[in-house]
Image (tube, rainbow, N blue to C red; front, top):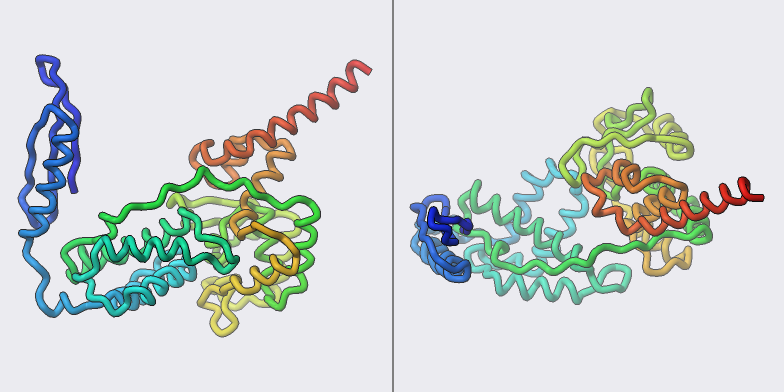
Length: 353
């Protein structure tokens, strides 16, 4: 990988030091007066180094993307938290490039698939968001990196030279009172035995879909009434309070469906050691509830919005949702301000009446 460092000489002159480090190749460096020259040199040197590196043996060069996906799913994915989602994403890549040799897959081929992925649309009939497309690229990139650095199947990860899409600042869609009532009623009537509990849990805690589907019985601390998420999106352990309806539903489920502490709470019908899939049940519930432009992740936005409208500060919202900074919850600031105005109005009515 190339890096460029800005330096100031003793004479006060600004220079840019370009450094190229690639495993298995000697380090190269050079200093330039302009950053653009340092960047251009870095790109040229990186291409040269990669082209002169020893190639994989002929046997490894025959591996296909399909083989990579299968091995990654069986050996690497079980240690990940979003097994269902990433399996789906990897299998999509397999349908597109499964028969292609890894050594023959170029950034241009991946870029073409990226465009197809974005235009193809979701199960809701809407175009895939930039964030979703980037997640597909991320899981493919990690698979290529494993094949490169651990298995020795390839010499380079082509996804690293594929441009990611620019993501929007984020949605703020949340359920109004009527929509929420319709959705909960429809989920309660769903054929899926878990959908209603999952949606209630999402609304009452703000947990992500992957976090909920990844829960095992050992993650529930009934004594302290909390859920302990062992691995979150930002890689940190997080405790989430379990209260009211969600607590009652989980307790009832344990009384009727508990077998082992290692089992998934929301498991597949055939195997309690595997997480369930609620995509079809969720899509039907949304359609029957006559709710438009709403995704499962918007339940998390709904939780944050309800917290803001009930007086929670941005710091409290960030803490409950597991955000490290306030940046991600600033979209709810106007709701907090509205609440403050209401509180002040009530106070003024009392003291000046």
